[in-house]
Length: 116
Image (cartoon, rainbow, N blue to C red; front, side):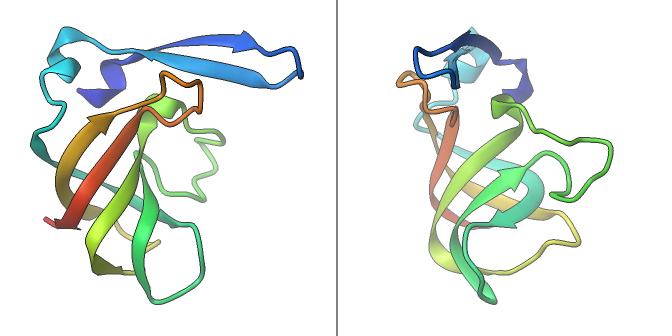
């Protein structure tokens, strides 16, 4: 369902691509609710335990999906550590925040996340 969000992209004066979300009504109803989602962890930093990472729709090294679109990943801010996992999908629960209006390219943040 989160992949139904559309993206408005433009090139900024600095030459970088900027994007904003266009959330469907169905996705908007999920904001502030605890959701459960599965995906692949892409860690920001090395370490066996992670509390801040991206949850992606595809494995990070997948040769068939070079660039994930902003509607295909979620920034996860966990309240408990997750074991580092890059080889298999994980399930995460957390409070969904809809973001990206600042053209940051991050459309979803999952707060107070825990293993699901």
